[in-house]
Each structure stands twice: as C-alpha cells, then as structure tokens.
Amino acid sequence: GAVVSQHPSWVICKSGTSVKIECRSLDFQATTMFWYRQFPKQSLMLMATSNEGSKATYEQGVEKDKFLINHASLTLSTLTVTSAHPEDSSFYICSAQTTGLGGYTFGSGTRLTVV
Amino acid sequence: GQQVMQIPQYQHVQEGEDFTTYCNSSTTLSNIQWYKQRPGGHPVFLIQLVKSGEVKKQKRLTFQFGEAKKNSSLHITATQTTDVGTYFCAAGANNLFFGTGTRLTVIP
Image (tube, rainbow over all chains, first blue to last red; front, side, top):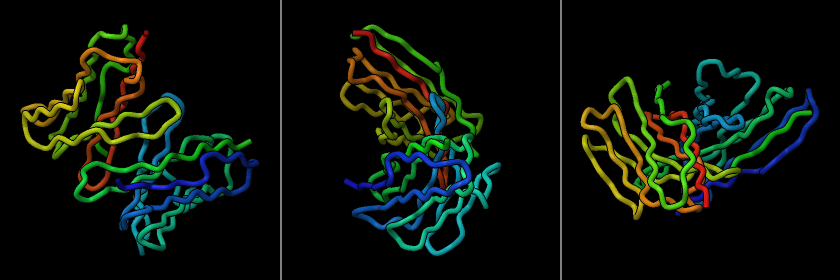
C-alpha cells in the first residue's frame, strides 16, 4: 500500500532555532500534501496544503512566515518551523491523498519539543 | 474549514461491550471518512462513505452515513483491547478536516 515517510520522528530544539520536517511519498507521486498539528489529547488541525511547484495554502490563523512549506518535487514536502518557541511544541503530521484507494495516508508524525 | 463535531469525547467500556461514536455536521457532506489513531501513533484510514444512507461493515465495525449526509456513526460490536485508540471522522472536498474525536478505552 501507499506509504508516507516522515522524518524525524522526534526532535528537541532550543528556543529561537529552526526545525525542518520532511515528508516523502515512497511509492506514489503526491502533487498535494497536507500538514497537520496535534496537541495532546486534541484533534488534528489542518495547518496548510502543500502544492507541488507552487505556494502552499495556509489555513486561517497559521503564520506563513513561521511555518515554511516547500514542495519541490512530486514526492517531497518539507515543513520548517522557524524561530521555534515552546508553544510550538506539538505533534506535526503530514498526509497525502492516495488516488483510487480512498482516504489519506499519514506519515508517522514528528514530535517537536522546544526548550 | 469544515466543522465536524463528534460525541462522546471519551468512552470507557468493558471488553466485550459495544461502542458507538457519532459525527455531526451542520452542512451536507460530499463524503465522510473514518480514521483510527492508536496512542502515540498516527491516523490510519478505515473507510470512506459517499452515498446517502450508506452502511459498510468491516468485521466488527459498522459505519453508517446519514440520509441527509450530515451525520455518520461508527459502531464496534464486542470490543476488544486492540480497539483502544481515538476514532476520528473527517470530511472535506479538497482537503481533510477532522472531527473532535472519541477516545475509546477498553477495560479487560
């Protein structure tokens, strides 16, 4: 089946630094990928839609300059959390829609802790 | 984005008991999807419902889409400890918005 690989699984960074999270579709091409954030015991909140070769579409309330998304190829999307602060600590998950199979395939997620 | 509410927020059941979670939208949905997220894991796609009144079964799981396509339910018969996790409904046309989720605990 379709696999979305996400790295790193977890990361601890100092306040003020930037962190890059990668999301790859391993056996299919994903022209569109989605980035979610999930706080403990809460639902997944859609942050942005990543479009290959064009600018990402951000949901209301998500800072574009803070969460930089790049989708340079059909198999790779990256999310960079810039100037991270403790309130950015969360579980970040990417996903892609797998045409014909129904549903979305999710990466394993990245647990970010900003200290 | 799409607003989808789920109830209950939490459910504790004894192993062997049944479990149901309900999903409600104020607007008509083109389709609805269900996901399961184990503790510490990521969401895993279970099923997609598209037709009004549709009912689909996966072993002990029964999924239903309302006639008005504004609500949906997931019913688990005779729960097992492996059913533990959070169940989310999700909807959206070009992207996916998740419901609030129901966290299921199964007591052995």
